[in-house]
Amino acid sequence: MEKQDNSESLGEIIGAYCVTLGLTLSLAMVAIYPPVYNSTKNQLESMAAESPQKALEQAIFIKENTQNFFLRAFDYGSIKAATEYLDEQ
Image (cartoon, rainbow, N blue to C red; front, side):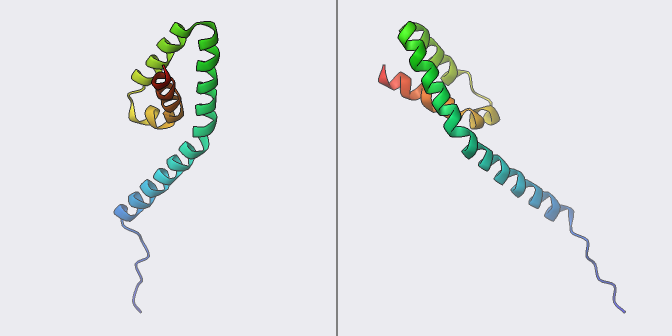
């Protein structure tokens, strides 16, 4: 009788884990983007009604201070709203 080798290689396990993690993060970004974008946009608009200068400073802060890749990925909605606000000014 031949013995069957059913073990997976470490590379296959790591590859499957990375694919799963990538898909999970992608789905999380898609789910998080709309509420973050709308919240940031509303925050900047309400701030602009009180103090346009303060809203401008906040938009610049959001755009320039999200440098970490993972934070940038999850804060893409905020960055997009801040960029749109700055483009309108």
